[in-house]
Image 1 (spheres, rainbow, N blue to C red):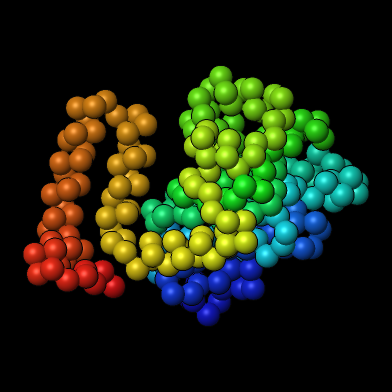
Image 2: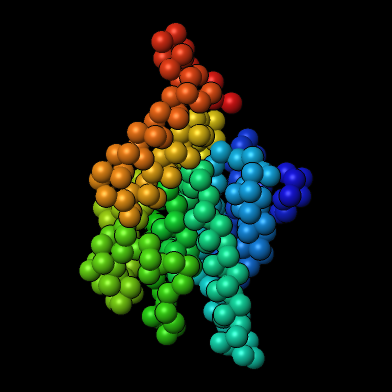
Length: 262
């Protein structure tokens, strides 16, 4: 897939792969089109056929993502089969997103409910505001979670708190979401999108190989012992010191100039 083949809900600009996960259509529910186009773009990125230093999850509607399209669920002749297809498409996107080695930023304005909350939990940095609200939303329609929420949420907030949030279908405001670690920081509600894009551009212009290495180490830490992690860190920092990025970073520091990681 070439840069010119990325379609309307997926855009590559200044090294940032922007994926618009929801629009005004269908009440800012999760966009199936974005999931399909996003899978194609992310597969190209993960295969090394597309160059991007950061992924930005965003919305063009009043909410980040209000969850699945419940009206479409209701109108399906075979609801179980229809929802299975939706979940499989969504999960293909989540798998590619989770496999990405570049930073993932989410600009979370308004509601992030259901699938929207699931996506927020896959971001490396999620920026929200005081008006941001998150909610599992699945119990309200008698569904169980998808998008990996039962895997990510316990790792973010702990298993006991995750059970409380999921079973009680808790509404979490922006301040509480930061306290719990679901959101990374709060900014003014009117600048969530611009701040998320600014951060994504900063990541894209930064030491991409160092970010990849750090994400790989963090992933390994979930199963490594401390001794294994120390060995992995030794190998990684040694390799980074001898890489073009590491050499440029050290040389720029000594020469008292801004590093050029392009």
